[in-house]
Amino acid sequence: MESNVLTSTNSNGNLRNYDEVCDSFEWSQAEKAFSWAETGLVNMAHEAIDRHADSDKGNKVALYYSDQHRKEEYTFKDMRDYSNKAGNVLKDSGVTKGDRVFIFMPRSPELYFLLLGTIKLGGIAGPLFEAFMEGAVKDRLEDSGAKVLVTTPELLGRVPVDELPELEKLVIVGDDVKEDEKTINFHRQFEQASSTLDIEWVDREDGMILHYTSGSTGKPKGVLHVHNAMIQHYQTAKWVLDLKDDDVYWCTADPGWVTGTSYGIFAPWLAGVSNVIRGGRFSPEDWYQTLENYKVTVWYSAPTAFRMLMGYGDKALAKYDLSSLRHVLSVGEPLNPEVIRWGMQALNLRIHDTWWMTETGAQVICNYPSMEIKPGSMGKPVPGTEAAIVDDEGNVLPPNSMGNLAIKKGWPSMMRAIWNRPEKFESYFLAGDWYVSGDSAYMDEEGYFWFQGRVDDVIMTSGERVGPFEVESKLVEHPAVAEAGVIGTPDPVRGEIIKAFIALRDGYEYSEELEEEIRNFVKRGLSAHAAPKDIEFKDSLPKTRSGKIMRRVLKAWELDLPTGDLSTMEK
Ligand code: 6R9
Image (cartoon, rainbow, N blue to C red; front, side, top):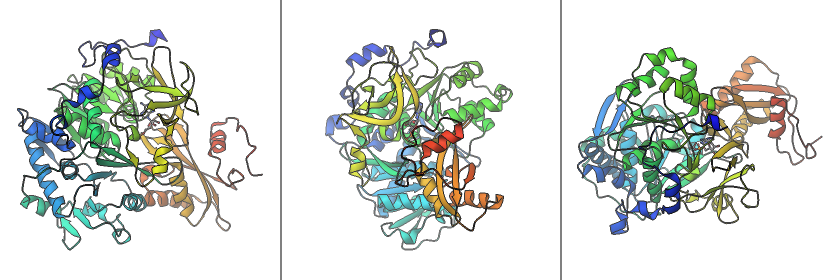
């Protein structure tokens, strides 16, 4: 084991003496930076943007945006003015404190102005992946009671406006938008809007952002975060991202995923650094080009992306000058030691794994620049947070025992609610104090945490959480499908891929066309990433006597493992 340790070459990291800081650090020390220290009130968008705009960083580039068609730069002053303008457009649409504003569009500067504008008004922003199809969009808007939806003309067709009585206004970002009582042409109003706005000063416990995420049962749940999360975003930007004033930072995640807001918006801008945002889809050459063009120094991405780059080969890599890179991080899935080895060889840098979840709001277990890395380990808890391995009753287990990865309640960026579902929120906590993550792991004698798997059936495909239940529900909506069971199966690039087992209704027979039709049905109804890559047809599926599909048995079939205890199985 020891021979595998990668020593740090960065004695200049912002977190130099991990153990000492752990002993002495209190979150209240990080709060001094923010306005509430003086006024008792705060606003994330002020702290991330306006505070810098009004300082000597006003003319510094805050956002380097590019995609296939656009290449733009915005200073902190620009970001202040444009988010004010966007805020005014939303204000005219009736947005006030606490209202849910959903933003369903591809990455573009406007998305960021509008998200910040929402927060400036004290609204709760709900970012949605552009890949979502009608059913997924409807579930989220309905559950949250969204008042305003921001979208594009291209995506509007996937919004069942007539079925959403609480949705009052549509703000459309695009050309040739026809306005009516409900529909607002963003560009026209934005042009005319004032670039000053009275920020809504809120309590640190007021709602700010709502991210929907999948569990193993039920519909996706709305995880609510509050302005207070900024403390942890700010502090981990220093310790984990290791950001310093002259860094150029790129987080590849879309804001539809928590990484794309916590670490694509809040953390870098709270730290006042230049933030690169690249629109469009993943392509290896494009990504290397982006790193080179902007001379990115700190880069935050995900194992699936690293594996794709790895698979693309080092010849492509050799064409680009990536010498500006100094710190690379990963999140979302287990970071294979093999990928870390690739990083050492191809980039000459260690890739730093970080572990956290939508529900934790910010990084919790991480590898720090100044620390030794044990490839395969997620690292150690962020100072100020307490993580442990607990059994199902909430008892803390000794080192090297497998159990539930849990975090002591009370870290600053912890979710504050599951929207509309207080009992679901409570169900995350064991013995009152421990937040139970749903991941199993162990901790070694030196305090490093090692990921083992999900406790539940949640599938991780290309770093995205897919709830099997949601996919199964969609599948059985198809007229030919009697029963469906969905599992994740190992995939060298995507981590897992989605596999569906299907029993057909009487009168239907397997054909390639039917298989494709069923796959497309899920694509159209939920999203492409939720559609099963692999479908296997069976006469019937293993079920418990209460009729629950036994995914565990499907998994055992798939992986050629023993099926275990079948006593509850229906015969
Ligand atoms: C930020 C984010 C959370 C789940 C989490 C775990 C998996 C995240 C990981 C990791 C192994 C890591 N996960 N980071 N597994 N090593 N470094 O990913 O949020 O989309 O809510 O997913 O992702 O299973 O429970 P989210």
